Length: 89
Image 1 (spheres, rainbow, N blue to C red):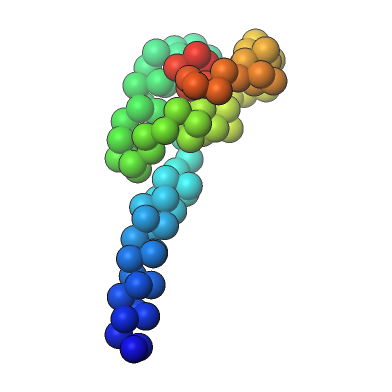
Image 2: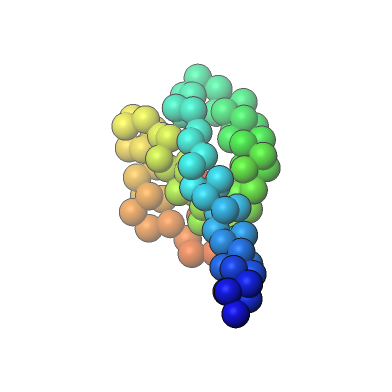
């Protein structure tokens, strides 16, 4: 019985371990001078960390924005589209 419990716990933690690497991902501060290059770097980190969903990408990008950049896109921050928040941003 103990071995079954261990097996079940292992299966339950595998997705969490993958999610943990995505959660611990931190993007560099947003680079106002060259946004296309910054987004290339962000996309690369998303791939390496297994971040795939629009919502996670959006949340990570928002957390990296400077105050000035956040102010410029405040309409998208206060009401992001539910289907494609990252691509819209």
